[in-house]
Image (cartoon, rainbow, N blue to C red; front, side, top):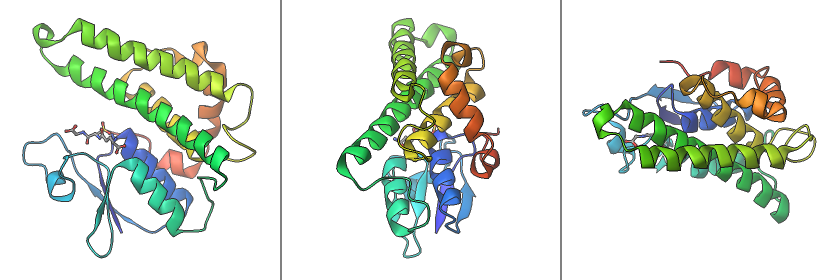
Length: 202
Ligand code: GSF
């Protein structure tokens, strides 16, 4: 299978980490979805990355559908629990982390516009969502080693990708001092080969 993504996408990073953690062989096709002649719309009508392209040519998106598929397709190191309540908790944290990432991507894109075209109301709305989301993610983790149980799940992976994106695009945000428990989680994740190999690069 082939993963189409940019090397900066936090959602692409989530999919790559799941592929690496589950030891699923894959080919990486690096694409920039923002270029006018991007080939991404040939894989995904929405023009977004990541897209997983299966051997039979079927395209799978978005990242939540990709990781669900990958977790089912290989029994190695399950990242999404089966038990309904645990599954809901893990996918709920993923939704929260992805939501913070979505808001951060919107802020980043808005700030790339000419200053006179930027909407400060829109920026404030998205920044509030980012900071409320961070608070909620810190609260959900508390003093636990992982979001659920005694090993890493997709919840930790999604949160780690979001925090890595903040470091990459918003180095001025001091989330480590505001949320030492998230800093501890990020430091632990940063020791894993899957996280090291996928650090966002321009
Ligand atoms: C979000 C993908 C996305 O925003 C998912 O896969 O989970 N809900 C989707 N991808 C961005 C790149 S990024 O910043 O991760 C993207 O492809 N943007 C292109 C565009 O035209 O919006």
